[in-house]
Amino acid sequence: MKYLLAICLIYSLSIASYSQQTDSLASDTTIVAKKVDFSIMPYMSYNRNLKFMIGVIPMGMYRLNPQDTISPKSLSGVAAVYTTNKSYFVSFFNKIYLDEDRWRLVAFGMTGDHISQFYMDDIDAPGFYDYGTKTTFVMVGFQRKIIPHFYAGLNYSYAHHYTEYEDDVQPASTVETNGLQITTLFDNRDDVYYPTEGIKSNLKWISFPTWFGNDVEAQKVNMEYNQYFSMRNGEDVLAARFAGKFGLGDIAFEQQVTLGGKDIRGYSEGKYRGDGLIAAQAEYRYNLNPKMGLVGFFGMGTIYGSDTESFDWKLYPGGGIGYRYRAFKSVKFNIGLDAAVGKDDWGFYFRIGESF
Image 1 (cartoon, rainbow, N blue to C red):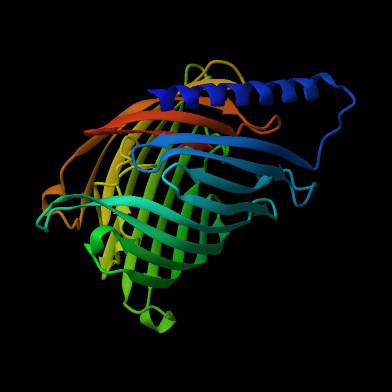
Image 2: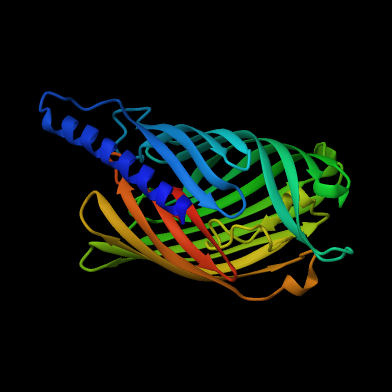
């Protein structure tokens, strides 16, 4: 409870400070349109695994070509986060829209030390065991519009993981991967940052071939289907999502997926992990006014390929509520905080943009 109160207090003070800054700018009629809409956001969250998390996220929206009003504004930023279980993460992110939205570019990089836990039951003392992974990850890619609303592209990712396990329940490991991703996207949403109607459907084939510098060959298929429905005469949005992540071949521990986060909120212990997952959820986005809103969400997920076979193909529900605040004046782009409950688990989630 003390962590929850601390999160709410710090978050409220940060939003109040940000609100005063934007109101001050709005009252100054001499301000002209800026080339970069810049904002510095606080990061506060808590879960049962990483514990209390605090950080800062400076980010900006802009147009590379001011004459191109068809492309959505591009987004770039940096995030630095420290947690009270002594994990840390530093990352950068870029989404670039070019040539009247014919080209979409993405670049992401992250380095950090992730101290977490996983569940083992095939040993003398089954239960949670800590592990620490030092990770460096970089991904760059592009998509090109082929026909209206349909894009195809290619991504490259590099990852280096060094993992140590509590009580040597598994030997320390170093995993280095080079991945190629073939991507397709159907996107007819009315807005990329806050859609009120339309569909976004992604399909990614991710390959880790041995000829590309990988020790073992593996494949992953990620798919998602999001649909948005305008509600309450256009004031609110009902969003629905189906997602699947399927690991094929020799999936390393660091390449496994964990139930929680985007699919499904309410699981933060890291207990349910495996080679793949399937999840479906819905979220209602209620706008109190142009700056603030509330969300309510519920979903169900399952996993397969877990080291604990009894976890496979069980249904895991998760749901909760959240708060949203508009981060930029010129574009409806929200930040927020969600509280969610799952099966014998719970968590808080800081959001940059919508959950999906």
